[in-house]
Image (cartoon, rainbow, N blue to C red; front, side, top):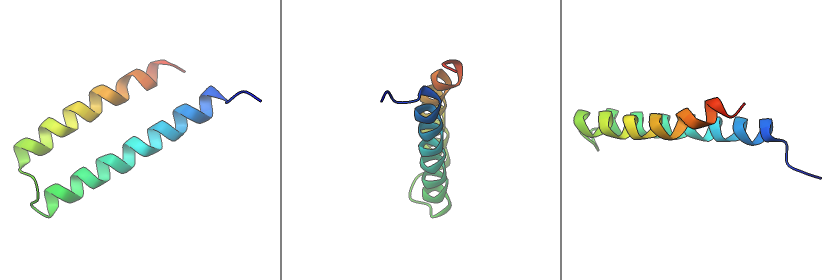
Length: 55
């Protein structure tokens, strides 16, 4: 009945990748600057790191 931790982490990783793709698309469409792109990517990287160590 409990949720499998591996499945939850995999789902989180997949969602983070989708976020990264949308951020890249925003940069490519010039909706955000390169500087903003870098800053946002750093934030996303910081959020995604902890999930790598929970396995």
